[in-house]
Length: 159
Ligand code: PNS
Image (cartoon, rainbow, N blue to C red):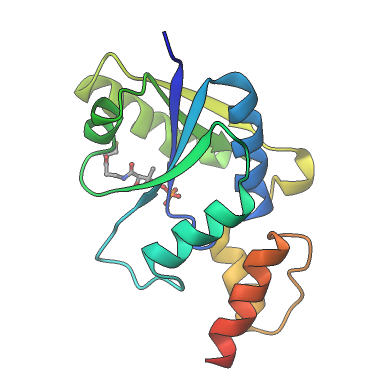
């Protein structure tokens, strides 16, 4: 049986922490689908298409592909025939929300298992939100996001 995992998120933008989790997942599973949430409520920095393109450019492992989903994550998992949802855990503060989501997803779809992975310590404080804030205020984000992503961010502010 093909072990297929989904790594869902907003990825606005993808950080080195996300990339690290993708790399770890690619080693553990036969196939990994990085799934970008189409969320019409939020005011993102990048469009879904831009985020998909950024991930494609950077997450270049042969068993990794990028998709998008709207609606329930577990429905997407079933549609994609994925048995596993991967989530990255940074500090213990992430745990509460992640536990809620994992248990809700299990209730909705008992056949889909959530697996938590820890990114390298060097990235354990990174979040897309913080990176955007530092970047917008003129701070250096070098090394915190892939080079390609940083360039796209520079282009965004230049208009
Ligand atoms: O990167 P994020 O924003 O932390 O990712 C959150 C995400 C996309 C995993 C979560 O919001 C999600 O799964 N949304 C889809 C809607 C859904 O299934 N909600 C019920 C989850 S219990």
